[in-house]
Image (cartoon, rainbow, N blue to C red):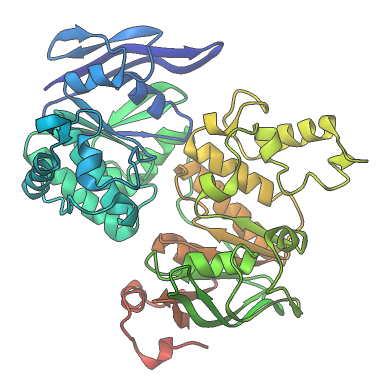
Length: 506
């Protein structure tokens, strides 16, 4: 199936999200759509999937102009979409999710779950997706949930599959698996529109790369183009892809973690007798495959989860029983791994989210009343400083792109004095220009004397930022090493293997 986008434009009031976009998706092609956060990628795909009506332009399928008033029309035309935030019902099985909306029944209106299970198995085997049709979705890892979304689209006989930021929430291993799935889909004739801002991924899997900047297609490149060339096309300027920093001037321990253990609600030890210290003026990176206790450890440091054993000391004071509000007041900054759950309130405006943990301060409230002029001025300053792409400071954060939502969280946490900065997946879902900016701010915070703890599944990010690297496996810190240790050795530690004695904890 050949898909053409001709002069597609979308305006929201005076704001033009897409401006006369032309694209052609050839049959059996992986066409990558690369662009900054807020460049208009998702808006374009939402028009293509019938979620938004174009202001101007047309969509052409196999030479015939089409008009979509709903996703159902797009599905009928052979277009499927896997959204960045999955559209699954957690308490349903895989088969039930796949049949949802087009339920088939047998006698007396009973759902034909057997037929749905058979379809899931057939598609799973055909495209090497490895999904159990009877598994409960809430019990599946994120990468497998994404496979369920792909199976849903394929079950509707999708000839063109839109993947909107599909790797934003995946581990490196899951990303590799997704790439193999995309190649298999292509080999069997499915066209893929792959929306991302990750340069390495488009070069690894794309046949053609179209770059969108501020709502316009600014060029098309082959996957042989260098990362530097693609980054410049995206951002409109030269971008440094390396973190530049001076040697750390390390001071005394600011945060000390002593024999901390966390037990989850099911009674499993997810953090096991962990000890480390974060020192002033250094970045401590925590590396590990997601699901090895990093999330629970970080939440215990902020007071979102109370440790079941051990102590957490901030400048020598025991804060093990402090809640999140007190921890923030103590001078701990927090960039959570799941911004939509822990980082912002979607229905609140940008300016309100920028003071979520600051509104009680005299700068923004007095005598129980908010100081609206100061809140507005703070928002305008942060929007400019962090290049938050929004129509106005009063726009709800839920209306922003994922990367701009992350910028709101980062801007808020960097706008107050900190003793410790805890950043979990700080650049998840943000583009290359924003990554450069956030990395510079993290290094700048370190250079002020703040103790910085970075948790990331992106090993490149851990290496680039860290002065020391602690590796977590199965709830334990198995080693603390220098960032000059070869990647292969770090990989072995992340997998639970041991390396030479030199890489044991110091």
